[in-house]
Length: 337
Image (tube, rainbow, N blue to C red):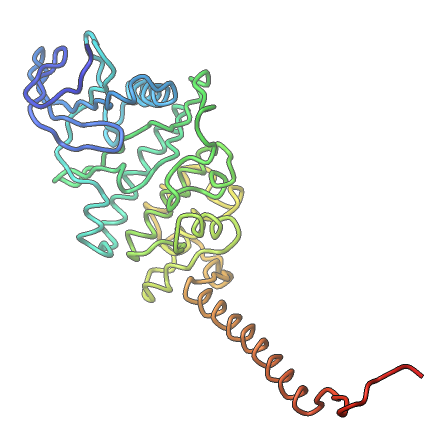
């Protein structure tokens, strides 16, 4: 009978040595491949998800795409000799997430942020050439080794042009992580390479400023802002930011895909030589509505609304006192003539 696995147990050719992390759907173990002696990472879904058809499709997608991709900035998925249950075997990366780095360094130094962005973009150039769009690029899905090497992971919702037989009928078409989702994803479209470019631009914005382009009290407010408002310019948070870098970021996160960079190769060229980027005045043409401004406007409307009600109420009291209703005298009644 199938059961949850634990550290210290053997799973096919792998000896699970320690639990690295738990997510909402799977456990990740460090393990030793007893055939090669190499350290590996094993991602094992929780039992309740193994029989879920939609989850199975996502997990299978992640494994198939991972096996096909071979790039130094993408975590390599391995092919076990035999599998007795659902899991993914991957190269073991001794590192931390970009999210953890961003929590400790807020904002990142420009040179460090650009180095990470270039490595992510290098991986994007390669994966897009293989017909793969990640669609969920975010700091949590980017690992960084002690040597500073970037490794992209989690291709669970990737769009793979070579495997369109895998569908997502059981999931919402608006998939991704709200802060890094492109507007077309919010609107329910599948997206393309420019969707990953949007996510990269958002990550670079956050690395350099310590903030996101759109703020909101909840995910729905953020998603509405993305589809109908302009972002905050990076210079609002970092007044001395290099204008060429701001130009790169704002072009990458343009609301309409046609106005963004059209390929990761274009982005990489500008990231490698930002001093050559031509300024177009994008930052000065933005009309963002900050959350604070929205709250101020809402408060003003409330003051005006309740002030108007109070004014009407006072006017009615004054009229009632100024023109009291006529009362009949004792013993007299009003009759029609």
